[in-house]
Image (tube, rainbow, N blue to C red):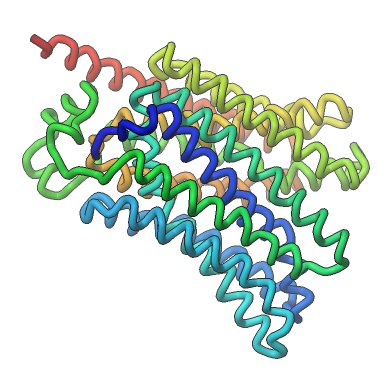
Length: 419
């Protein structure tokens, strides 16, 4: 991919991508906060709501494998990024018309909700590859951390905006219509970022932009290159993050405990969740900075953080439980940002979109499996749940240490090969 354009510094490009994500998150997180009530108002059953939301998440994860590979093969990183954001910017505000479509409203709403998730799948690998290219000049950890922090601002602001408009008008559809504004802002800022960065360039010299990826390329066999396989160290890291993700108990299970066991009032749950999102943003910034200073070793703390979540979050004391929720948010911040910095360091730049697509699918599958496990074990025995999470994090820690060891070995070989 080409160098960052002269009109913007690398940091401005990173922040530009962050603003795009902030605005886009306002759109789709705002919509997702009321998807259930909206579909219910159109006549949907609880089964249909669950089916559409589940199918949407599966689509957003599994299609990334296809879109990521497509981005790397075609070099159309910007085209896929624009197409994905455009789908979100169009589909979500279009939900405003569904109450006026009589019997067809429910079907149209379902199509639009799934369309938004397709947009997420189409853009994510290509956008993340472009972001990694821009962030390489300022530090991958710091770049992804700043981006994630801005992203979380949108994740909080979107639902708040929707809630305010719905409360003021007494209806959901005006809130969907208002989301056309941040959607348009996302596309306009993305256009400006694209002009500042230029087009991706399919060049061997430029795509092997780091010492690590250059050596990784030389180490792979010719057959491996022909098949376009990802490096083994990537799969090792993906397995480590899958184990970590599976052990991170979902907020749905945590909030169930908080309300059913009367730890906190129901009205306090959204506020606690918002605090967790703030912790996620701060953790992304802090871990990103440490990532660049420690060459990735800060990630060793992640399994320890995840293992502590159920011990604290499922406590009977409000203060201890809230502390656990904040740790849950912090762990999510690292998983959603800093781990992507290491992915960018483990694979050739020409395969980053493919890697991010596969990585998202692996993490998503692990999250679903972990959510089912947490729900089942919580109902059976809390100590067993804590033990299961601890065991999964021990596996994650071993795999992560192995990943970092191989990563450092590649770095050492790269340094020794320099003239």
